[in-house]
Amino acid sequence: MALKIMILGANGFIGSALTGAILRERDWEVYGIDLSDNKLGDLPKDNRFHFVEGDITINKEWVEYHVKKCDVVVPLVAIANPAQYVTHPLRVFELDFEANVEVVRHCVKYGKRLIFPSTSELYGMSPDPVLDEETSPLVYGPINKQRWIYAASKQLLDRVIYAYGVRDSLDYTLFRPFNFIGPNLDNIEEPKEGSSRVFTQFLSNVLYRRPIKLVDGGNQKRSFTYIDDAIECLLTILENKDGRATRRIFNIGNPDNCVSIRDLAERTIRIAQEFPALRDAAKGTEIIEVSAGEYYGKYYQDIQVRVPAIEAAKRDLGWRPRTDMDTAIRRTIDFYVQLGSFNSLNASASGL
Ligand code: UDP
Image 1 (tube, rainbow, N blue to C red):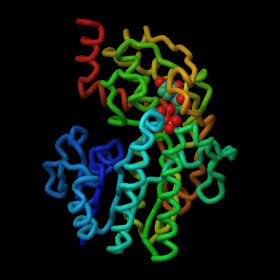
Image 2: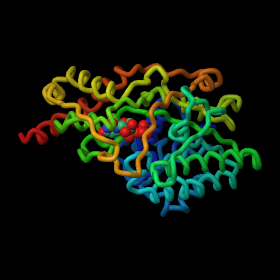
Image 3: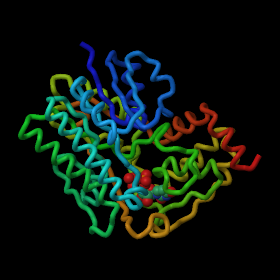
């Protein structure tokens, strides 16, 4: 019997990429819900994809009914953008924690397998140079630094899920994304600062001929992971051959792509120049420095370096990331060029 997978947030960055990969590479059925369908392209035409437009906080009966009906539940509805942790902390808690804990409980009630997105943010300002799923301490700043409401909400969910595993044998896998990047991460056509995560923000700045802003000098580092590599890992987790991913936590990240934010800015500008549609805009893009206070306000606190240990995923899932930094940047830009985003926007951005 083909697996029935339920994806909440099927139109999101991870959800849309995962749905596409399942339909292309597996014979499984997907039941998806999201607020809109703009990232799904032709996928809803596939008769193995059953998609409805809706809000999981309102369409609660649809959600419970489909948890009952499916084999595996992948709840990907969440706010995962640091700019919003500081501007809308309660919305982060209500959606990321409160709405999701209901889904977790449905999985317990109906005995369904749960693949849940934890986060690399969970490690916070951990002193470990390489972050390990089982041993690294999770370190956050004071309450007045509202950024940590996301990490704290997610940490509590990880603990709740873990406890259901111990008490009720809930079959779950927690996965921790490390700065996934790729097509459809955020909206590059949204020029407002802070509406996107860093890579989309930089692409958008190039496009709109605005300076790239390095928060506090841009020496902080992240390990960027190309979405296709991440999806390959998620498919293996979904497959769960011999229960190898059951009641486990996996970092999904690419330690070889650990670069500073300044380096990311420079690479983005350099690689954008390879594309005729972007050459002029990229050549003229300035890099400036701003303070974290100016950019995010007083509730923000940064993480200086974030490198995943991926031995667990390598050893137990037989997975390894393959896409290097420049290829990840190039493929993402190429996606938008193919889509024609830059042509029309270039014209409007330069007032043509
Ligand atoms: N950042 C930056 N300029 C921007 C946007 C973000 O320098 O225009 C920095 C931000 O302060 C952080 C890093 O880039 O140190 C990554 O930010 P992102 O929003 O992608 O998420 P995070 O990795 O912190 O979860």
